[in-house]
Length: 104
Image 1 (cartoon, helix red, strand yellow):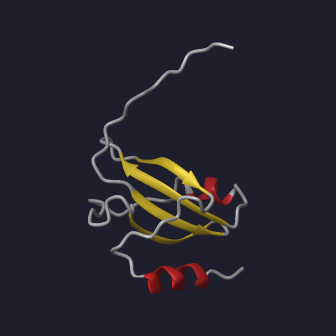
Image 2 (cartoon, one colour; image 1 turned 30 degrees about the vertical axis):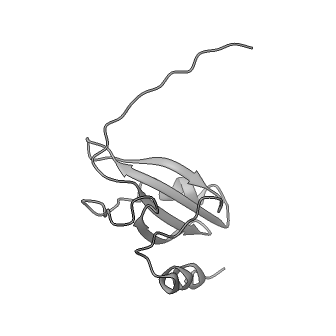
């Protein structure tokens, strides 16, 4: 089998942001573990992606986003717990409390 791979490069103006989701609800937003001291320049707008993430019907997800130069947040990576690292700047207790607070 052969084929072509096309890439489109986008310009981002922020470091990646990691979000943690329980039963389709975002329970925590923080820096990406690879850049724990980099906060986004503006508040993350989850409204466009929230219904899509909830529609997956998964009990736990992490979603990494970055801000494009046109002001739109782009999903960079979505994981089902395999990439759910905690950045060093978020205390373990904060993360545990956020994950347990969402009613199931």
